[in-house]
Structures are given as structure tokens and as C-alpha cells.
Amino acid sequence: MIYFGNEVGGLYAIDFRGTQKWRFQAKRAITSSPVHNGQAVYFSSVDGNLYAVDAGNGWPIWKFRMGKGSVSSVAIADHLIFVGAADGFIYCVDGRNAKEVWRFRTEDQVSSTPVVYKDSVYCGSVDGNMYCLEYRTGRLRWKFETKAAIMGSPVVFDDIVYFGSTDHQVYALFA
Image (cartoon, rainbow, N blue to C red; front, top):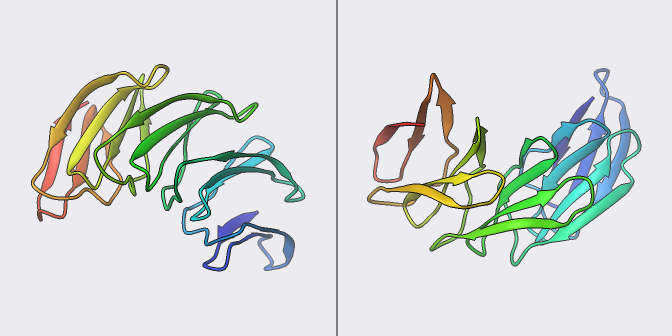
């Protein structure tokens, strides 16, 4: 199955033959990449919600209201869902019941998709910082300041966190 959203708020499930299996409608654009995990598909929307829908039929399982919209895709570890939003928070939500586990405030919007590696969450912010948080508690482990916004998502390989900044630099930090 292929899952994708569009600018008018539709989330679609298409099989490999191109046949539409179902469609879910959010109130505003879905520019994040949906993530399929188990029986659910998770995604954020510019309407300010983080959604979980049934992967088989598109029926809503739950939605979690964030402070503002999001273009960030989700990251999943264990049963925890991580996502950034335009209100400047990185959210951690329990995927089983849509309860907020923690939220961490950055100094500007978060367009970056979080990455979970070992017991940490890495996520950039428009404030120019790359944040490393303990993924179960949201406690700040460290932050690294660049000279401009971080819009893209980090990648972790071989215990190194790689990311770019709009200061035209690529950074490599020990995870």
C-alpha cells in the first residue's frame, strides 16, 4: 500500500496497481509524509492535528491537537510518536491513546522531521539549533547552534548526526 497526502487535506491509500483503497479528509493540507506502523498510519497536517488512521480502511483512530499546524513528518519509537509543529514545540504523543507524553519548546517553528537514534530524539528548528532530547522524557541533552534556520531533517549513521542549515553548511556531530 502507498500512503500520501495532498495540499487540499486528502490522505490516500493506493495499492501497487494504482487502485484507490480509501481516502481520509483533514481540514487543511497534508504536506508531511505518512508513516505506517502496525495497524495505523500516522501523519501531521497544517490544520494543527496529528492523526492516526486505520491503515486498512482510513477510519480515524484518534487525533491530537497541537498548538499550530505542522509540515513535519512523524518519527516512531516503541509506541511513542514524535513530531514538530509551527508553534515551536517538539511533541511526544503516546500512539496507543493520543495522550501527550511531553513537549519541548524551541525558540521558533519546527519544520524538521525528528529522528530517533538509540535513546535520543534529534530535531532541528528554524531557530538555528539542532536539539538532542532524551526520547522518553523530553529532557534536553544538548543543543548545537548554527548561524541560520534548520529546515531539513537530520540523518544518523555510524553514531554521527548529519544535518544541513540554511547557513549553507553541513554539520556532523557525535550522537
